[in-house]
Length: 62
Figure 1 (cartoon, rainbow, N blue to C red):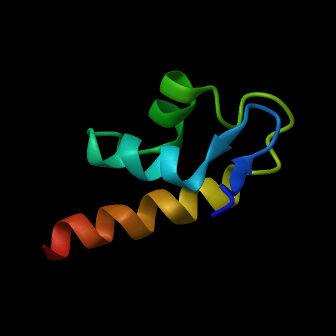
Figure 2 (cartoon, rainbow, N blue to C red):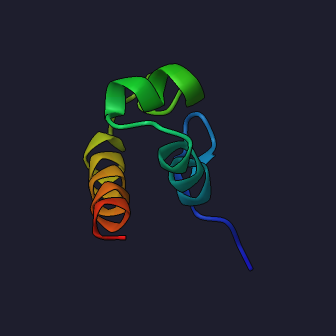
């Protein structure tokens, strides 16, 4: 299975983002600090926010 990088500039995958949320990340700023995602061109910011929100919703429903 091929890994899909959400942040191409910093090679941060959707799997990396999900793992970060599972370890306590709650927003883009914190994710950027931990992974470097969305710190170069920024074109991935909206996609990353959507993934973070989706995963936080899943956690809250569990």
